[in-house]
Amino acid sequence: MIATTTSPTDLLPVPVLEDYDVSPVTGFVPHDQPLSRLPQAYFQPWEETMDQLNHLIDSRQLRAKVDQWPVLDVAQLTTLRERQRAYVVLGFVAHSYIWGSGLDVSQHIPEPLAVPWVAVSDILDIAPVLTYASNDLWNWKLKDPKGPFELENLETLATMTGTKDEDWFDIVSVAIEIAAGPAFKALIDAIHAVREDNIRTVIECLHLAHVHLDKVSKLLPRMFENCNPAVFYWKIRKYLAGSEGTANLGLFNGLQYNGVNNNNERRHYMGATAGQSSVFPALDYFFGVTHHDLDNQSGHKSAPNALLLKMRGFMPAPHRAFLDHLAQTANLRPYVLSKTANDDPEGQDVKELISIYDACVHCIKLFRDNHIQIVTRYILTQAKRGPPEGWEDYRVKVEDQPLAVAKVEEEKSKTEEKAKEVEEGAGMKGTGGSDLMPFLKGNRDETNAAKIVTPVKK
Image (cartoon, rainbow, N blue to C red; front, side, top):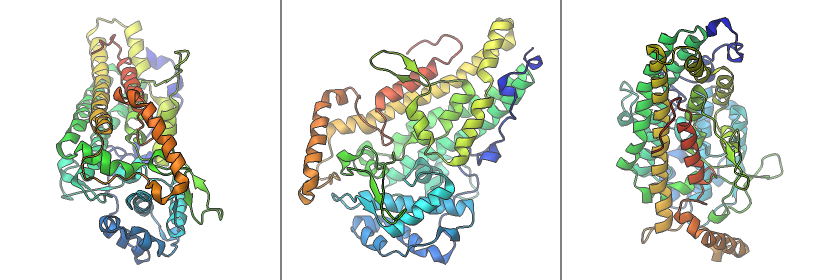
C-alpha cells in the first residue's frame, strides 16, 4: 500500500488554494470582483484618463494628456485590489501611449506614467508591462452582480480599441480561467486522497475535475462567435506587444522608462499572452505533463521548456508560488502508474482510475488542439492575407524617423526570407515572443503522450 511508504511528495503539506490568492470557485481570477476604479480622489487623473481612453486614442490626444499627469505616490494604495487596479490602469495607458497613436510608435513612456507603474509593479512583484494578469485576470466584471460566473454574464472593465471583438477576446479567457477553478479544488482533494491511498476518492475527485475540464476545453472555440480574426490581428494584437522582439513594429531597443532609477533605463519585456496563464502549468503539474526544449541540430529534448519558465515570471507572485508548491506535492501520475504496475490492472477500480485520468488529460489535449486552430485563423491566416483595404497600418512611419529606415528595411528583408516558413506556420511569433506553431504543437503532443493508455495520434 502506498500509504505505508513516505514519498517526496508527502513531505510538504498539500497547497491550500486560498493561501495563494486562488479561489476554489473562480481559480486564478479573484472571486471578489476586481475594482472598477480606484476610490481615492487622489488618483482621479488616472481614472479620468481611463474613462476617456478610447476617445483619447482615436483622437491622438492621449500622449498630451498623460504628459501632463502629476507624478502620484503609490503609497496611497492600501489594499491588494487597489494595487491590482493601479497596475491595470497604468498598463492599459502605457500600451495605449506606446502603440495607440497611429504610425508613430513611442520609444519611451513619460515620468508620470513610468514611475508609479514601476513602483506598483515592484510592490506586486510583477513586471511593468501589460501582462495576462492586467489584461484579463484583473480586468472584468459581472454584468449582473448577482448572476453566475459564466461567459454570458462577464464583460471587461476596459479595452484599448473599444471594440466588441476585444471585449470578447479577453472575456473568453476570463471564462476559461473561472471554469477551471472548481477543477483545482477537486484535484487538490485528489492529492489528499492519494496520500491516504483511497482509490475510490481519487476516482471521484477526478470525475468531478473532468466535468469542469470538459467545460474548459469547450470554451475556447466560442472565440469565433464575437471576435473577428481580422480585427484581432490588425487592430487589437499590437496593443498586447511588449518591448522585447518588437523591432518589426517600430520599437527597436526596448522601452525607455523616464524618471526610473534616475537613468531613464531601457527595458525589454515580453508582451501579454495566454501563455502567462497559470491554469495549464497547474494542470500539467497535477497530471505529470512535462514540456521540453528541442535541440533542432541533435534532435535531443531537454526539460523544462525555457519559454514556459520565462512566461512564469510574468504571472502574479502568489500564483508563481502556488505552482512551485504544487510541483513538489503533485502525486496523481505516480499513483496511477503504481496502481497499474502493482495492483490488478484488470481490477475495476484500477481500470476506472486509468480511464478517468486519461479522460482528464484528453480534455487538456483538446484545449491545445483548439488553441492551434485559433492561432491558425487569428494569426497565420491573417498574416498571409494582409490588412483589409482602408485599414490603417500601425507599423512605424519610416519617413518621419530617418534613423529607423535601415532597421525597418532589415526587418522587412528578414520577413521576406521567412515567407515560405510563414506559409507553414513556422517563424511566426506570438505576443509573448514564441515561435507559435512548433511551440503549440509540441505542448499538445507532450500532453497527449502523458496518457497512461498508449495514445492514438489523430
